[in-house]
Amino acid sequence: MSRDPGAAAERTRLAWRRTGLSATAVALLAARPAFDPRAGVAITVGAALAMAGWAALVGLAYRRAHGLRAWPPHPGRRTVTGYALITAAFAVLGATLVML
Image 1: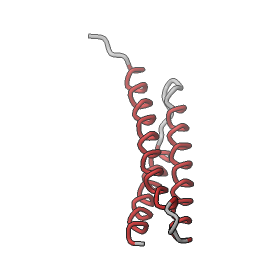
Image 2: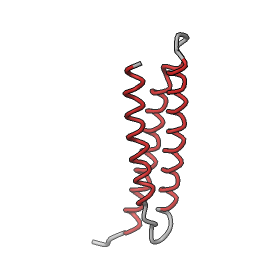
Image 3: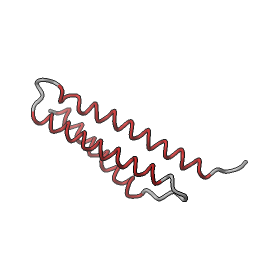
Image 4: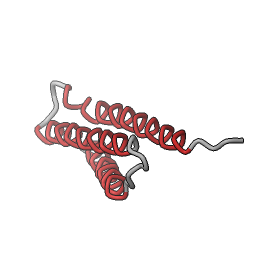
């Protein structure tokens, strides 16, 4: 059986793409309450923060996927840490929006 080290990087790159797509779904769900005619300023600001977080997540996912194309793949320590922090911020933002 032959090992293909490039296949692992390809699978990881595709996983980052799926993660970016799931971040898109979360951001759209977080922004949905802002389209209610009775939405207040706080909900609109929350939706704007969700969209800013989404842009950061997609940018980081793109950066990490691009780093995996190099040989050998670049380590993604800072990218993964940043992604985790922004995801935690998304959780706090979501909880805050639910409480409003």
